[in-house]
Length: 317
Ligand code: FAD
Picture 1 (cartoon, rainbow, N blue to C red):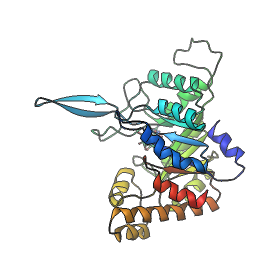
Picture 2: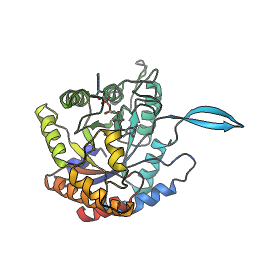
Picture 3: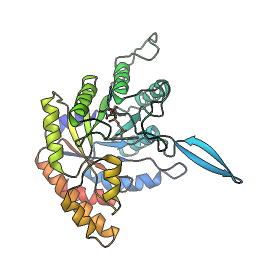
Picture 4: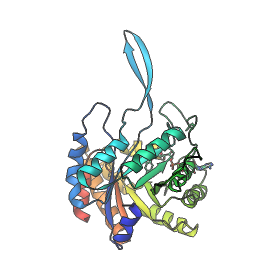
């Protein structure tokens, strides 16, 4: 079932969902299940599974370093299929421009269609770790907008090789990313919103936001998006702070601001166990206010650990 259909059939009730990351290559999927199990009592209608960019790893060959390009957390579509099968829940694979040619994207979408996956999240992806700026993959897409267009084409039965005859079209519901504090490369929030509108006009059905810690930023973003004519659901993404280092890391990586009260609370903690409690409490207060404002879904970034998400969900769902 489509994410938008879940939202529609909830009739204004806020839904619970979360995002997981595939295990590092070579690790068991059981670890993932162990973190999903405790969250299933909150009845998520869908679970997102991220896709990681490829990266360079260095293998020591008797003193000489062999540089290899690899994806350390593969398996997004397989994990989506296995979760869907195991828990009878919809899954949303994240599909990236970076690291994929258009052909590879088409194969991936065909796999998703055969597996009965109804939703995909269309993202550009970040720059590779070694690169300062995002470089489009040769034969791939430069922007999420182009990926949305490819998915939409497939929904209309149009493959990359236009001569292909189709009697079975996909009907993917397409999610895209939105940034209440603007994307780090965007020259302004307004220009970023114009880009978001382009994605929606190209066929995106809903938006999931980057994490934010000040609800006012989300409310203003939704208002500005509406004024621009964006009428699709905008799902807030929530991440509980878990370690002290997040105070530097999150603003650095995502270019987001943290409220002073949260910073003070985290800085006063003696250890990361206490930081985790502060992060949970902040996320509960944030979630309660968002729920009261009638957001369609509260979507949590679990980063592979469920104890804090469970503690938050217990207070809300
Ligand atoms: P785009 O929408 O393409 O925008 C990228 C930048 O280009 C923006 O600054 C935009 O304003 C600008 N822009 C857009 N179109 C144009 C144009 N035509 N001309 C000029 N500028 C333009 N990353 C992963 O690697 N894996 C994941 O699984 C993943 N999941 C995510 C989930 C969510 C909910 C969010 C919010 C982000 C996620 N990301 C993920 C991170 C995301 O890939 C990065 O933020 C990336 O840098 C931008 O992706 P995008 O889809 O927003 O890109």
